[in-house]
Amino acid sequence: MKRSKIIGLIAVLMLIAAACSSGDSGDTTTTAASGETTTTAASGETTTTAASGETTTTAASSGGVEDYGESTDADPALVDKALGVPVADVNEIVLASIARASQDLDQATIDKAMECWSQPDCETGTGGEITMGYADGGGLNVWRQVTHMEAILQALTYPEIGKIISTDAQWNVDPAVAAGDIRFLIQAGVDFIVGYPDQGIAIADAILEAEAAGISYIPYSAGYVGLPGQDGALEPGVDYTSIVGEDLCQLGTSFATIMNEQVGTGTIGILGGTPGNALSLGWQTCEMDALNDTIDVLGPADTYWVNSIALETVTGWLSTNPDIAGYSYEYADGLYTSLDAYEQLGIPVDNLVVTVRTDEQTLFCDWAERDNPNYQIWYSAGGNFQSRVAVTASMMYLKGAEIPPEILVPHVMRLVTADDCNPNRVTPTVSNTSLVPDAVLVVMYPAG
Image 1 (cartoon, helix red, strand yellow):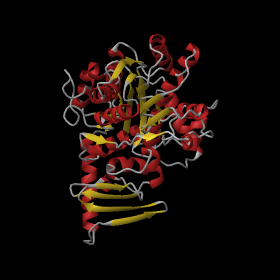
Image 2 (image 1 turned 180 degrees about the vertical axis):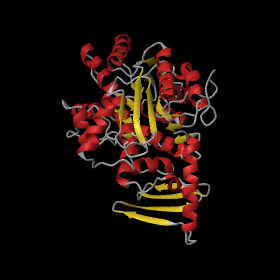
Image 3 (image 1 turned 90 degrees about the horizontal axis):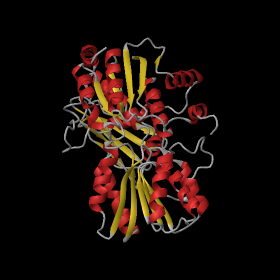
Image 4 (image 1 turned 90 degrees about the vertical axis):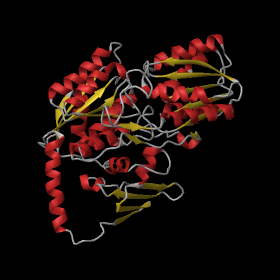
């Protein structure tokens, strides 16, 4: 069921709603136990007050999320969990996606989610006419697996979605594999595609083919199909529907500010994921531009977000420079494994500053055990839930909503404390900010 059919249905429903209206302003106010949420149908502005946890959302006159079957009445505790801390200016599509993230799932939903997660395709059981396509450029680590589950759980909140088809290029070095996955989804007749384009501009043609076929494409985790100014880059909102993620330059500048203040002078190592992926390239470029001249850089090194490759990289660096003062990386669990290099080489973990994006418990609990005041970790949030935002934005788009080219997810850098180690986490390799309920994680990872 492509966008035009759904738009027609929504138009009819809106006319019925207008006829039944008593002429009131449409303003609604909802108060939750842990914070107040006010929604007003007027301007489209979203504001979150960090000190109090209060979120105020105003829906645009051209159509707020409520006009497309969504609500911004998200549990404030879940908003804080997903973003890490209370933050200002949360996009209303982000709030709408979190509002659907139930933490109390029945067994039938858990069973269906596991079926869809473990199989390349599944029927949701609703009989819905919409088919969701999920295209991952590389799903071989825990972060990718959990992010896939986030998207599946989000899809299962929509009875209109009757089928889910998932592909995984497994970081194949041949971009034709990932491009072929997208073309397979086109041929399968999906109505929208979400995913992460590890191969970047090398799969641009396939993404353009999807959009030409009337299939929206929305990547998450700031997976731009090429960065602005890069040869062959596609433009979100023009060449593909939209993108979900942080401001990458702001993230990289945040990393640099911490390194400038906490390291000052010395050598740091910068690691990233797959070669040329926009997430790594975006923050790395801005971090290196903002670093003091007194800081030397090793890398950036491509690790494919594979722990063993990250360990190999850091081992090589330390072998020739045992006095590395810091590391920047997106992937906390990958850096946790990298620290094994210190033990293997007999080098103490001391006078070290780390900046990471994600918040896997492995790194944080290891930090707590080391109990060294000269070892700092600064982090933002895991971002797994961003795939949920991509699903909700896709469903709104199918119903006729105007989706902004970029759906920005705010980030805040925080210094790790002992409270950030949760020894009771179902599995320590999962980000603490993930919205996948423990009841699902324990089935996904029965060994912990």
